[in-house]
Amino acid sequence: MTFLSKHKLAILIIVFCSLLQGIALYVSVLHPLSILLPVSAQTYDHVKKTKENASAKDVAIIADDLGLLRTDIQNLNVAISQMPILKFVPVVAPFFAQKEELISIVDDVLSAHQTLVREISPYSVALGITQSDAQGQYLENFLKVSSQIIPILDKYLTNIEPILTKVTNLDVSRLPTFPVDLQAYAREGVSYAQIFDDNLPEIKTFVAHLPDVMGATQPKHYLVLFQNDKELRPTGGFITSYTTVTINAGDITFSDASNIYDVQDGNVYYASPYPIATYLTERIWHLRDANFSPDFKESMDFFYTFWRQVGQQPFDGIIAVDTQLVSALLKFTGDVNVPGYDIDFGLYPSVPQSCKSGGSVFTSENVVCRLEFYAERASLGENERKDVIGLLMNQMYDHIMATDSSSWQDLIMVITTQLNEKHALLYFTDDVIQTLAEEYNVAGRVRETESDYLLVNDANLAGLKSDMYLTRSVDQYYEVSSNGTITKTVDITYENTGAFDGWLNATARNYVRLYVPEGSTLLSSSGGEATVSVSSDLGKTVFDNFVRIPPMSSSTVSFTYEIPIKVSNDFSVLIQKQPGKELESHRVFVNDEQVSTVTLRSDMVVPVSL
Image 1 (cartoon, rainbow, N blue to C red):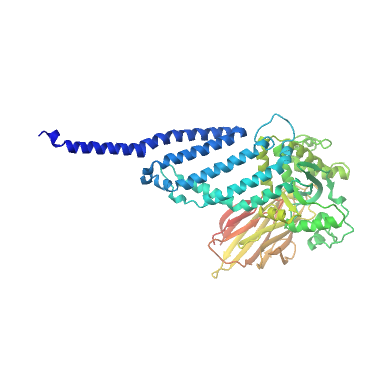
Image 2: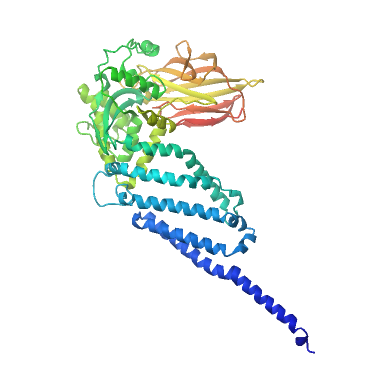
């Protein structure tokens, strides 16, 4: 018998087994792969096309693109399901185990956004998504359709809520890190989803009340207070003038600006707080000085009560703005010409250098100085002098309302930055909307915290506009005793960098209050002219003093006190920024060793390792 005949059966068995392996390989890998690869390529093409259409803002077909992607994802799922061998591949197995959950999340996301795009499509021009050749009031057009848009956004937020829950519950540790670190991408996505999910109740409340705030159902009336931060007061600046804003179904109208001194408040009597009585020698508390609480709501509660008592009209809210917001908006709108207020200060040798740039127009660089000149020095009548801010704001408003939608993101960034830095503050008579403003920290509230706390609140009392030249720096020193008791020293240094001119700058006269944790005990103080008093206000202990800073000099006031907080591993200090201040430098020391330096632009929590 030949070798072949001897081993024919064995060879046949080997061939048969190889054939079976080939069939198995084809069925389990090659055939599914032949389906998976084209589907993957098609999905990639559709993703690329969707991104192109989204970049081109082609709303008409984006919804269809999202529908195609949903189909692609389902086809991918089917193709992957035909390759069970993947569950044994170490790199892919963790993904394969969560495949259904991940596919479900992706499909839900695509579905929610497909619905959103379809429903907002009729409003795409007004929303600025689709460009139009028509000229006009772009922002006003958006406001007019906002009442129709809000229900769509509310529905979208409702649809997205369960998706966020799914995302935040993902076990990202099971995802592969090679060849692509899917864990890192997933963790970032889960983090964003968690932030969105945490803020969703406030977002939904905001969306639900936005039509009411914007006068969709009935006109809304707001009082706008102009606070001069160059004459700093507790909520941001001395109230110089005001205007009113009416919003009616997207139409916004401003009244002429009025001088705060024109409000006749002599028929209502309030005794002045002792700093105003002492350093301004005003025994009667006037409406213009009503913003004396560092808490904007507390100040506006009193201001609005006072306002109504002297016979002024009711409002739905109050918006306080300072000159830094005006300057920031001018950076956005560009230079503005105000007829009748077009002096070229380059011809005036005695005005500050900041006045001289820009020629006869208002720019972001010269606006503060020009406003001060027209308010204090120009040979105009009282009403003309104070009305310049109203005329300027109206000119800027016209520029903003005609802004092309491509610049809306920049405008939103300007406004949110100014709100965050407290150059604009909001107050509402509606409790729900007021609470929402407080939750977003745009209401100027003195905040509660279980950590250490510091607010340095200054009031310029008869110091001209010296805050234009005043710089501030704060040093915080912590000392910890063996029993864990914390003693803290706060040094506040003021520097008056300007020369005397008699109309903008002179000796700065600053009443300072230090707000610290309630129950703190004052141990010593230095600097200033007054005997430091200790009081309780807004859930804090308060130390105060009065300091003068002559031109081209500096002064320091210091407070040493014991705080009723013990050392902990997560010890920190919440530093709140006073509205109206531009910058405030803070250094933190522990046992005389500097541990951090921050420039305060907004409220900040600073960790301190004790």
